[in-house]
Length: 134
Image 1 (cartoon, helix red, strand yellow):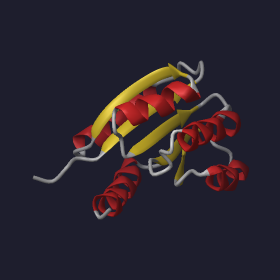
Image 2 (cartoon, rainbow, N blue to C red):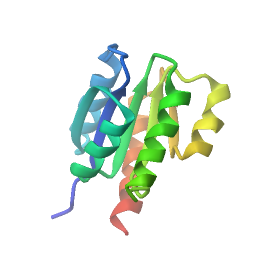
Image 3 (cartoon, rainbow, N blue to C red):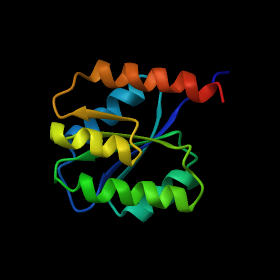
Protein backbone atom coordinates (compact mmCIF):
# COMPACT_ATOMS: atom_id res chain seq x y z
CA UNK A 1 0.00 0.00 0.00
CA UNK A 2 1.35 3.40 -0.99
CA UNK A 3 1.87 5.88 1.84
CA UNK A 4 -0.28 9.01 1.60
CA UNK A 5 1.51 12.34 1.74
CA UNK A 6 0.92 14.20 5.01
CA UNK A 7 0.46 17.97 4.95
CA UNK A 8 0.20 20.43 7.81
CA UNK A 9 -1.89 23.32 6.49
CA UNK A 10 -1.53 26.31 8.79
CA UNK A 11 -2.77 29.87 9.15
CA UNK A 12 0.11 31.51 11.03
CA UNK A 13 -0.37 34.41 13.37
CA UNK A 14 -3.68 36.13 13.98
CA UNK A 15 -5.04 35.99 10.44
CA UNK A 16 -8.52 34.50 10.79
CA UNK A 17 -9.42 34.60 7.11
CA UNK A 18 -9.47 30.87 6.52
CA UNK A 19 -11.93 30.31 3.68
CA UNK A 20 -9.19 29.84 1.06
CA UNK A 21 -7.09 27.65 3.33
CA UNK A 22 -10.04 25.39 4.06
CA UNK A 23 -10.73 25.11 0.33
CA UNK A 24 -7.12 24.09 -0.30
CA UNK A 25 -7.33 21.55 2.55
CA UNK A 26 -10.48 20.02 1.07
CA UNK A 27 -9.02 19.81 -2.44
CA UNK A 28 -5.79 18.22 -1.20
CA UNK A 29 -7.73 15.75 0.95
CA UNK A 30 -9.85 14.80 -2.07
CA UNK A 31 -6.58 14.30 -3.99
CA UNK A 32 -5.53 11.69 -1.42
CA UNK A 33 -3.42 13.70 1.03
CA UNK A 34 -3.73 13.50 4.78
CA UNK A 35 -4.32 16.99 6.18
CA UNK A 36 -3.59 18.41 9.62
CA UNK A 37 -5.07 21.90 10.02
CA UNK A 38 -3.86 24.63 12.39
CA UNK A 39 -5.16 28.16 12.77
CA UNK A 40 -3.83 31.08 14.86
CA UNK A 41 -0.55 29.22 15.28
CA UNK A 42 2.86 30.58 16.21
CA UNK A 43 5.90 29.61 14.11
CA UNK A 44 7.10 27.44 16.99
CA UNK A 45 3.76 25.64 17.22
CA UNK A 46 3.69 25.07 13.46
CA UNK A 47 7.18 23.56 13.44
CA UNK A 48 6.52 21.42 16.53
CA UNK A 49 3.19 20.18 15.18
CA UNK A 50 4.79 19.33 11.83
CA UNK A 51 7.41 17.23 13.61
CA UNK A 52 4.92 15.56 15.97
CA UNK A 53 2.52 14.77 13.11
CA UNK A 54 5.39 13.50 10.92
CA UNK A 55 4.29 15.58 7.94
CA UNK A 56 6.04 15.78 4.60
CA UNK A 57 4.94 19.31 3.75
CA UNK A 58 3.95 22.44 5.63
CA UNK A 59 1.49 24.52 3.60
CA UNK A 60 1.12 28.07 4.88
CA UNK A 61 -1.73 30.40 3.97
CA UNK A 62 -1.25 34.17 4.32
CA UNK A 63 -3.63 37.04 3.76
CA UNK A 64 -2.15 39.24 6.50
CA UNK A 65 1.14 40.29 4.91
CA UNK A 66 3.15 38.69 7.72
CA UNK A 67 4.78 36.09 5.45
CA UNK A 68 8.16 37.89 5.32
CA UNK A 69 8.43 37.73 9.11
CA UNK A 70 6.77 34.42 9.99
CA UNK A 71 8.13 32.13 7.25
CA UNK A 72 11.81 32.67 8.17
CA UNK A 73 10.91 32.01 11.82
CA UNK A 74 9.24 28.72 10.87
CA UNK A 75 12.28 27.73 8.79
CA UNK A 76 14.57 28.55 11.74
CA UNK A 77 12.40 26.49 14.11
CA UNK A 78 12.63 23.51 11.76
CA UNK A 79 16.42 23.92 11.49
CA UNK A 80 16.73 24.08 15.27
CA UNK A 81 14.89 20.76 15.50
CA UNK A 82 16.91 19.24 12.62
CA UNK A 83 13.71 18.89 10.56
CA UNK A 84 14.81 20.75 7.43
CA UNK A 85 13.60 17.83 5.31
CA UNK A 86 10.00 19.03 5.80
CA UNK A 87 9.13 21.00 2.67
CA UNK A 88 7.32 24.34 2.89
CA UNK A 89 4.87 25.77 0.39
CA UNK A 90 3.19 29.16 0.77
CA UNK A 91 0.01 30.58 -0.71
CA UNK A 92 -2.27 33.56 -0.40
CA UNK A 93 -1.72 37.26 -0.84
CA UNK A 94 1.97 37.21 -1.70
CA UNK A 95 3.34 40.12 -3.75
CA UNK A 96 5.57 39.06 -6.65
CA UNK A 97 8.46 40.98 -5.11
CA UNK A 98 8.38 38.63 -2.08
CA UNK A 99 8.47 35.31 -3.97
CA UNK A 100 12.27 35.13 -4.32
CA UNK A 101 12.71 36.30 -0.73
CA UNK A 102 10.54 33.41 0.48
CA UNK A 103 12.31 30.89 -1.74
CA UNK A 104 15.72 32.07 -0.54
CA UNK A 105 14.44 31.64 3.04
CA UNK A 106 13.71 27.96 2.34
CA UNK A 107 10.25 27.82 0.75
CA UNK A 108 9.89 25.22 -2.00
CA UNK A 109 7.06 26.96 -3.90
CA UNK A 110 4.82 30.00 -3.67
CA UNK A 111 1.26 30.05 -5.01
CA UNK A 112 -0.48 33.38 -5.63
CA UNK A 113 -3.95 34.07 -4.26
CA UNK A 114 -5.98 33.09 -7.34
CA UNK A 115 -4.03 30.00 -8.41
CA UNK A 116 -5.98 27.13 -9.92
CA UNK A 117 -6.36 24.27 -7.46
CA UNK A 118 -5.17 21.69 -9.99
CA UNK A 119 -1.84 23.56 -10.08
CA UNK A 120 -1.44 23.05 -6.34
CA UNK A 121 -2.49 19.39 -6.52
CA UNK A 122 -0.12 18.71 -9.44
CA UNK A 123 2.77 20.32 -7.58
CA UNK A 124 2.06 18.36 -4.38
CA UNK A 125 1.81 15.12 -6.40
CA UNK A 126 5.23 15.82 -7.96
CA UNK A 127 6.64 16.50 -4.50
CA UNK A 128 5.11 13.26 -3.26
CA UNK A 129 7.08 11.34 -5.86
CA UNK A 130 10.40 12.84 -4.72
CA UNK A 131 9.50 12.40 -1.04
CA UNK A 132 8.57 8.73 -1.51
CA UNK A 133 11.89 8.04 -3.25
CA UNK A 134 13.89 8.99 -0.15
